[in-house]
Length: 207
Image 1 (tube, rainbow, N blue to C red):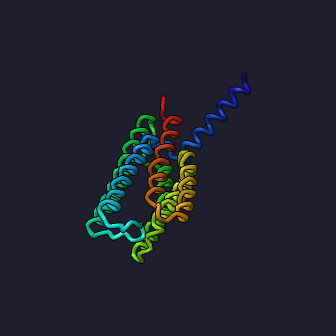
Image 2: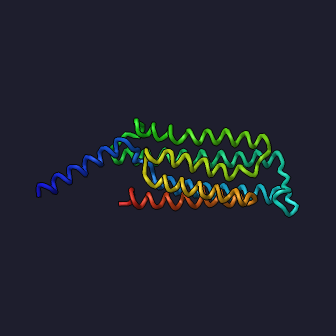
Image 3: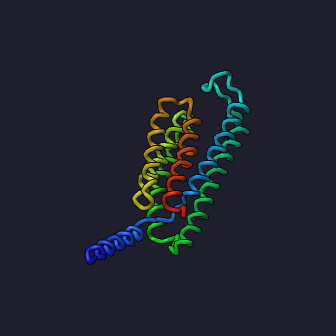
């Protein structure tokens, strides 16, 4: 009995230390919704690129108008803003329900470690767009996002690491099939977010 008590105490101490060093209030439901937003965005992007433009039967011969480019940026920004807002709101509510702080040292470390690869990748991709090297945009967004998830995973739920690794693998495969970037975007940012979000939701949040 005494040994079991010590083991329970040690387990409780480990849980407390884990929660103090990791941001555990990340919402799995927000991942599911982010995936849905991404799939809707991918569908709208597909319509804009392949239905509202001239393809001449080949993706390499796409002629995209200025109006279509503006529409694509609007779609991308909308998906990002909706995903971020949903993630912040649901994670804040989860933290409140668990009587934990939403903005503390662990969430700051998570944000910093997530943003370093993401911002680096974003700047690099902007340079590629400027040089009209558009074929690499889809693979690199997946790869840098995956690196951001892996880098931040040590400060939050472990499932984020596997999401990041999956994104990196999809990005590398996508470099072999440059004409199918939108499909890989939908697989990565859409279905993978939904899958890993559901896993985290049922593992950590579902009563």
